[in-house]
Image (cartoon, rainbow, N blue to C red):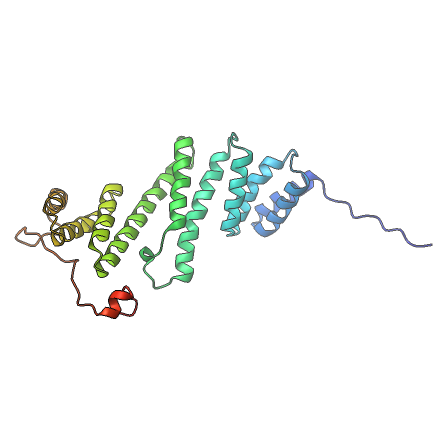
Length: 258
């Protein structure tokens, strides 16, 4: 007579949740993620479902699975838009996008100017933090989100100015001036505004746009009279726009082989 095997008993919803909490407590986030995903799969409408989905955001983020934490946060926001904890989901989604940009820069672009890279994830982080502050101004995460938004604004402004320098090298002066104007108009408190104004004066003078040059110079003088845009005698000092002698190959390849 053959031996009968007893099917392995599956853990209950509470047992899975307790196992996940124990794993989180000892910072075993990979094991916690496994338990939480199992719980979510087997008991999608159970007693611990909402809290488990919230814990999954935390476990994935703590395990440095930034993309996974964004997916978990998106799902929580979609399923529980009225939850008292939904502000946390917006916050983690923001810092995950923020740290994806910072982490990729450090890991893959060592020695490369960060401002030369398109800050796509930073833009998304800014949007996440902005939505958090707009929807939940009294959230415990609002203050940190505001501070991060200031850093992101500076990052975006520096990227725009880097693009302006690129256009100057390519002698695309109108495009360069537009980038500088974008910085001044959209990031007025950024540290690079002074440099953007100096570039604007130079570019508008080169383009024979006297009124625009005078307007930019007036703003520069009113806000940075003792800054880099003026010499010891108080005269405007051009310094960023230098026309280069470029051969045919440089022109048709946009300087790729310079």
